[in-house]
Image 1 (cartoon, rainbow, N blue to C red):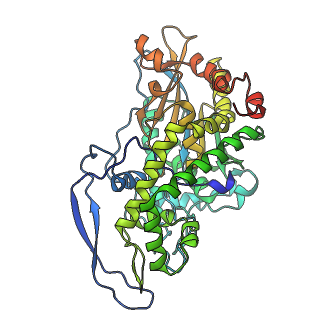
Image 2 (cartoon, rainbow, N blue to C red):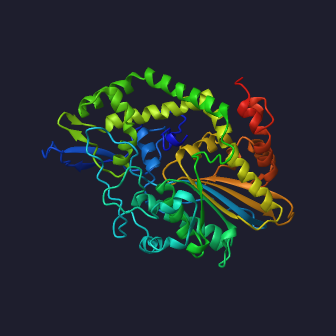
Image 3 (tube, rainbow, N blue to C red):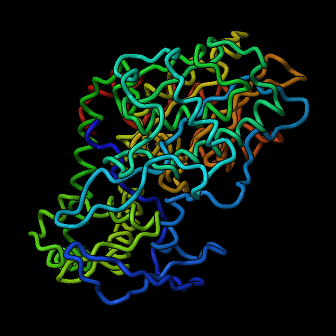
Length: 474
């Protein structure tokens, strides 16, 4: 799975181009040969309201998640007699530079130096930079100790977190602090390292995203209390990664994706046209995963690349994006990805459930958990939980598990699950029916426990993770 980091699949339920409010931004790109091509205009939507049907340009803007207005969230909402006792957060890293380059084009001119006076910014960005420069006291597992604590290149390196990505998680941390620290007092002012569990993959963008969130979240960011664990697997399977059937379903899903792509004549025409523009074989262009690079241009409002043969334009972008939306719709229908997701996420969900059970029994350690991860981490978790209406993880997406204690019946515990601030508890497969009978706005903890410990394996005609991983496909 390590090679699959940040592979883009966009969630949707329908596809269609819908007129939305537009404004025109004139752009005068300078070509590498020094010639000035004709002034051309990029069409960028004013995101006033969500279009009535899925639109590829609108969905791309949602994916970018560029910080703008203050975000509304439903985190921390419960009846007054409930007590919040634990929060576990799974995040995707923030905005990053592309992992792939389009051959024979100039790389996007994005500066990864942190400059507080440059937008987007954050009131605590300057203090964050100073604090991150003094991180020698932190405990970092393995190779994490050699990674930089914040991005610092005048021209971004491939996959590097941008200033936008840092600001996204400074905002996430601030929002969660206002709710969980200031309002619910989840951590005291004299918190200890034992009250946190922090884990990240070995990429600078995930480590830096975690540090940005923690900096604005914690009551007092003390390097001596930061113990960051390294997770080598992008699906966080830890010591339970041996699962042949998980790999089988992933291969089947990849074959489905390939089959859908070769059937899409519009997509093939676009790739042929783009390949002519940049002067390479179509196969080589496709292998360079151009959408990854184009999304960077799009999210940073930088004009798409040009050559002497022409310019890659918004129409190219929209066709590729629309195909991704169609792919996601079919992915939901075929269920291969769902079977993969159940097996891919069980180790992480099992760890989550075990920790929630310990806290429900009265343990006071690891009450706040942060996993800093990738789209290929969050996406299967959403699928496994049955949250089919959720969009594909945008930059700086967050999935939150809250554990609540009933003040009137202290032995009873409930969970809420929130995705980017929206309560999705009753979209989960294990709590949909409970919602119809319950007067409380959350799900009994035992329903989540039963799902992870038992019900996840029923579709495989198995009773355990090991058995489901090694049983032949039905």
